[in-house]
Length: 457
Ligand code: MN
Ligand code: MN
Image (cartoon, rainbow, N blue to C red; front, side):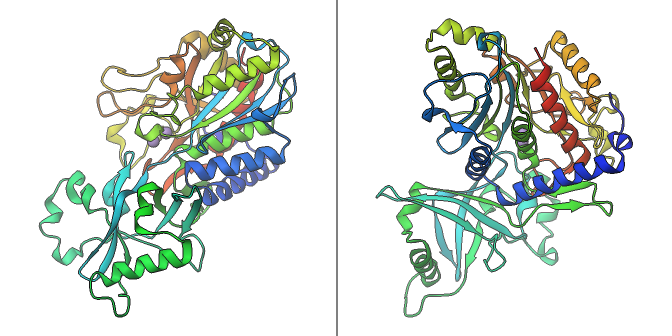
């Protein structure tokens, strides 16, 4: 069903399944807000469903289910297919990092009886959206002795939260005439973390008190921040949105909404003809760089391992054949048409909330620059699969020509010579602390992903 409102086709029973699936999604993103947490939770779910660690198996055959993890920040789940792997694999790829605020290496300071954490934002945040709201701290502190302290502060009802202060309107005359990008500047995103002095301490007594608390509760010293990875995210759970509960309001739908639906698509598929996988990567929001980003060799190395364990034999040609014959959905969110801001969209080629899984033939900016432009041959195959299964889908591009732009991991995997197209869920208020998706799009994407891995060839 191409570009129609997907809600209309649902009967009461199907609606029940749709809402149940979304309840499970809401729970997942409420509990797992960082790439590490998503990886950890995914591995737990995979193990529960009988998936084995690739490192722990010596040979692979059709029907086997395995997973691989990279540095606690990437996870890939595979169902081994009946067909020779060199005929290609079917891939769902999403990213599990979201825009946020990170602590600096040397973050802690005191000023006028307040203790602060200094920060550096991660990804494309709209800075003025992050002030004067409850925030939580998620991450790890790695100590010199090799131990790792897991930190989550602000999510339990009994936890305190942190926040970034904002100026009162009564004194904002100068601030109010600044352009949006300057209203709150990067160096002003400092977190208020305390204001009670340690007794009998002369200098920086508030900071000293914070350090004492960290030492008592977590065994952390000030220098341990150098080897920490502490991420500041919006506090609290995702919620149903709208009086009809038709949408989900939550942090980081970009891109955990595609990550969760991709993972579930693989989990809920019993057997496949072609080896199929969901791969969840990190660092998309800052260019997919580094060992845990999509540009890393990790994913193709995992495929090499699988080829070797299937065939008890390996050479580079086998890998190249496999990649060349593979099909992938780069499952990433799409900008949804917002009726409050119609001027930045071109209405015939915008994604609409509730119209289903969204295919972006290309992303990029300024003349498609930097994008993966999917082939029409591939798109025709996808249309056939989606129509046969009555999956609701639409096509879109990111806003008006020359209004802006963006990228995903699509071009990176297509550089391996795979067939790749962007296919994701439309989002309102993308990159805001609270983003919005439609429950029907979440469910249609999940169904579309299942049809894709079962049928594309
Ligand atoms: Mn994204
Ligand atoms: Mn993004």
